[in-house]
Image 1 (tube, rainbow, N blue to C red):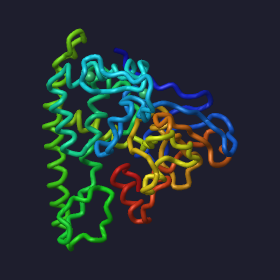
Image 2: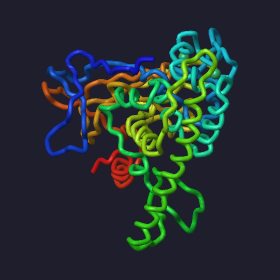
Image 3: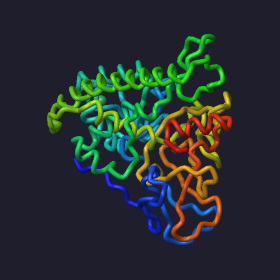
Image 4: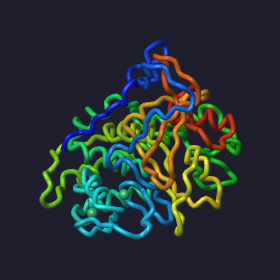
Length: 348
Ligand SMILES: [Zn+2]
Ligand SMILES: [Zn+2]
């Protein structure tokens, strides 16, 4: 299997941002002048790098490759009968880049790994596994992903706010307003404890995933037996976490959801919107950096959830970096925005 390669649309290039802002790494730049409202490109995710969230109630009614809702017709199942279903033979064939290895019917260890990822409530483990399975070996995977930001993910995880009033872990996007009073030493030690716990969970998952990758399905080339370290999986987790973009799929029973002119994530708060949440990684779009005054935005059509369209918001001069607002359409307060950007993307 050949690792995927990024192909930039004409007139656009991914290159280091340079300057004092080394944290940003690479960004997407234009070599020509652009007008306001111009459609720059549209793209599908890197093969296999799209999925619906675990807790979407009707996820089995969506194609496991392109995330489209089944509306009756040409659905096809995994030939090994693991239960995976696709909207058409093309999606099934494209999904085989990882599914040949990551199939519960062909590979007994995969069911264990998937179950663990579910119990952790963490879809990024599946994306990381797909990246490794699709690219054949760790070093090849890194050749394809080398340009993308990838801090070990425990460094980008936000410790949940512990509170007397609520025993539940509210996760990284919760407000801190209900935090109890800790002095800074307590906080530092809680942070350390949390990171150690994430790291140790990653080490367990790395062991499971190594077993998956070593166990080849009948007729499939065996992957090289190689130790998958917690650090390597941690970096891959960081990579998929920082580069994954939210997607939504129409989940209405009757008709495809009408195309939305704004970003998909904006509609998910409405209880009436028949949308299923997911995530995807794109070769070009995922290389774009965040700006609060972004000159571009990402649009998507929930009836073709895998495809994203990047458009300009204002005129852009040659050489300018093209940025999007990562929190476009979200309903965070200013403080929550700052925290999410800082914790998840290391943007200050
Ligand atoms: Zn499909
Ligand atoms: Zn299967």
